Image (tube, rainbow, N blue to C red; front, side, top):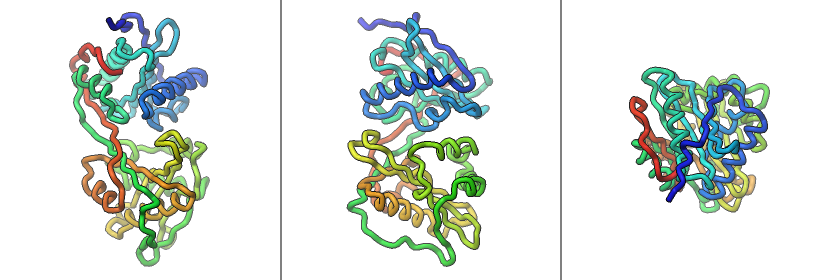
Length: 323
């Protein structure tokens, strides 16, 4: 018989940054879950927001007898939708901790009338599917991870339009121009289009940031687009280091020139040059144009993250499976 600790677990909500000690405890919890599941339960943004004083986040901590057994972060930057990511300690799964976090997330979402709750599940694991189904949630978005074997990619010079040149990003000088183009390129994207100056600077402060892998294309001194690459250490996406086409953005005024294809090729060339044999990227499954473009470039589907939707007008049903 499964011990239901949901009546003994305490879930607290904190707006604003967590203390360094609590943030470290959340990271450790996420690492334990990743070691068991083979996929990180929290994406980059929630981890950066743990101690961000400007982040529009609410932190939910589930404790049992004073020990952290679960965590959820709510992105409350929208008046119409709350996006959540959560993790439960593998030793305390199937005991009601996930249910307690989801119930509190629902309560926090209802603070704004009519606001909807969305929950990410990274890796689309069977346990997460079962958890969502038991809670009455359905899939509302799918984010594909696509992967390419760089050793099998044919070598060819990217073709740029006449007058277009390439250079590397200059920290301290290019942030404003890049954010302007990025916000225009991703005006309708639910995450990328919202990147703030603080978000950008937080990424520049990360160990993985390398301006040599952040390439800008411009004409007559005007920024037209960019490709930003990232290198993941061994263990994050397999036994070896893996590159990522992190962001490709083209100003709407420059679309139709083939810059997206050229920028992707430039990014892959850079990742090959630094000695990597594989690269990944993420794209929405319903963006069929992008998916087909990447498939033509040699990418194949390697995994998916899914977002589940919950009707916040009713309470989540009891959950006895999954997280």
